[in-house]
Amino acid sequence: MSSVRLTMLNAMAAQDFIQALDRHVAWGLTDVDLKDGIFGKYVLDLNEAEARRAAEELAERKLSVHCLSTGLLFKMVEEGERAFRKAYVPQLDAAIRTARHLRAHSVRLLSARTVRHNELTDAIAYTRAEHPWLMPLYREFVDRLHDAGLTACIENEVGGNIFSSPGEIVEFFEELDRPGKAIFTWDLVNLWQEGAFPSAAVYRQLKPFIGYLHVKGGRSEVPGGPLHWASTLAEASWPAKELLTQIVRDGVAPVICLNPPHGVVREELCGTDVTAQDVAFVKAVIAEAQ
Image 1 (cartoon, rainbow, N blue to C red):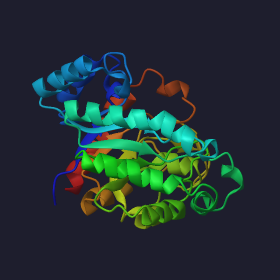
Image 2: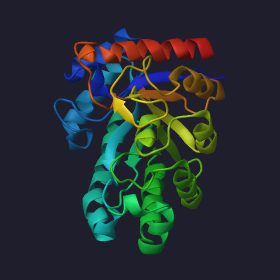
Image 3: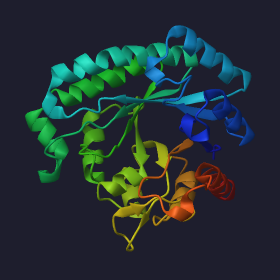
């Protein structure tokens, strides 16, 4: 079994980019996930000089870029294909250019959204019937990334997205039909917020498509209920240790990425270095599971 590695969104380590990289090294991490806070910029807003400088800082610390966490394709499908192309084709070009400078492994695409989210039982069937351009657009973006030597990581987001159940995610990836080119980034808590509590049963459904994992804390007020409170992973209501142990042993995701917790921040959490605690928690799970 190959070793599973830990990373995080870069700004979680520190708001200053250089300090964030130094903190990665201090924690013994070898991979970074770049989103924003890179010399004060979003990753796709870097110019070539800034991307080269970032690459030099990473190389000096022997850090590799696992993913560029872009916001590509996160519009409402009802805005139409033209709006998607106008907004995101130039951003895809920028992602490929920046990824080349940074020698990134993958680029994040997000699940699109729909204004009809609350009334739909199958958002993928809806987009197939009413917005048939969407899946070809995903295939086009995936293929362009693959041709550039990059893997597309498609992540479930919150806020009316088309991935609100495991069944929709399975349906999407089967219809996408890009094995080896696109993987699913399972954000366990995002999917919980959409109604699917993180469990072994959900994992079994999604396992064939998972290639990357986003984890964060979160607590409900009642067992199995909706997320309400922010928390560390150790205090999470979802079975973080058990699920992560199984996922590490299965080797479905070579890298696990920490995200900031969602939910209302309790007073006792204020002043706590949640990131440091979560790093220690995941590292301990990986060490014990491997």
